[in-house]
Amino acid sequence: MPMQTVQVRLTKEQLKLIDERVKRGEYPNRSEAIRDYVRKAEFLELFSRFWEITSQKPFTMSELEQARARVWQKKFASRPRARKAP
Image (cartoon, rainbow, N blue to C red; front, side):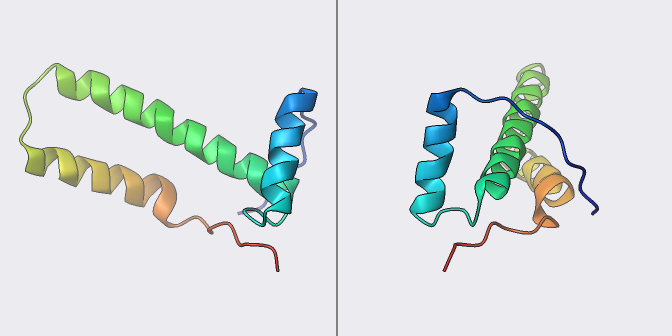
């Protein structure tokens, strides 16, 4: 998927947190760390919506797991994973 460049303003504390994770090798660079944070935010939004929907109607654990697996597959499984820096 082609990516676009955007300008993002972060606080010193936010940038320090990102830089520390890059330095520890959790992410190869700042961009990948930020992309991962955005993916996690997307997941939390989806989970929040999922929780709203499922709390309105009783579901079996099997139905919940099937729905969770479909959402995960559609939204995240096809994306490249973060690589650790050498």
